[in-house]
Length: 493
Image 1 (tube, rainbow, N blue to C red):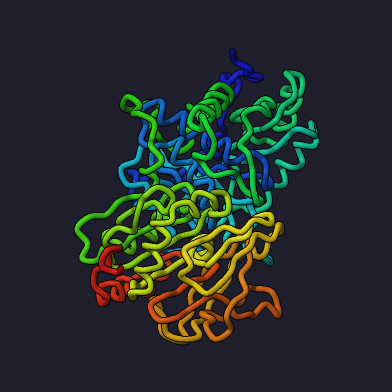
Image 2: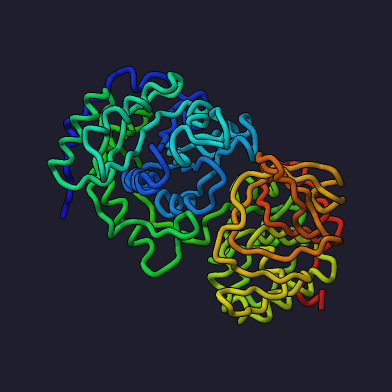
């Protein structure tokens, strides 16, 4: 049953909203479609995932992207588009690298869809466009469509849209999608307000709280958690397909309206590209508990000579034969009982690290390497490869960009070298001062502090790095692994 509130045939796109073209050669010069928000929580992920899925159903090859250091939204993109989503972040990489990442991801695609971050002009703290969706749209030549949560407004939409449209002439609005309309009458009032502002309406989504994507820790619950997840994604796609002018969106970016027959739904294990033929085997934890990786970061490691060998700390019996170990972030606290129950894997990891396996762990991976993890008063045994204890605190401990300076030489960088990263965690550990890895600094005055664990061939920290923006660190990691030689669970024991 449809809940459509407006007629797509009403939409007229002014010529000046579609002027310009993307400079990238990766997708034949077509512009990316940038799904921006008036604010956080406006419904960007719902719209972006729905548009990606609607394009996939038409047989189009979709290249998905996410602005900023997000790991959760790319999972939704993958399940909607059927392709890995790439992060576009000028702090973690650089403006030039963002263009390169976009070009690689868009190569061969029929349409590229970029989901923004926060509000359209929100970026790193302070004035300027750095880190914002607006900056990324300018770098990629994207056509910007603004998603607005209209649950509690009607004609006031007009000055809001007029303000966004006129704020920065270099970031013109191609149109808007209005979310959470309460009735047909409300939808008509919103269309009239948008017309007053001179911004085309490309869709009006009725209020449908039952298909909302659940949230956790200021973000969405990861794709794949819970039963019937793909079915819910398909409902989101249905919702957007029924209420958004997908043909109009495709026309904005010069993409065809239909392509090859749609393929099968993607599987969770396909969420990151594999590599083969590398000189060094790099074991990468990849399952429901550990999945915070940047696609281009993994590809950078592969380009440096690593063969990415995936394994599951939840389901596999032991660490695969490998030359190095990479434990990314995730939500180990949600799977603490299962991680504890897999004793053979915990012991395998600890033995391999004790035998000298070069190991890099970030955030959730750091927590897994601790002796114990406390969650709501219960203690769970972890790998015990680090002389540390971790606990969930019930409140956010860190959120934002940081710059690290290595206190001593480690497997990624020499002493004194700097790297940019991002932190977001609710757990805490009591560090051993003699083993501090980094001095960390954010943009706030007085923010300098020591952090992380560095000893021998081990580096563990709450800081997430993007190897695409730290290519020297990627090369150093692969080099350290190559020098160590292959370590397997059996050999370590």
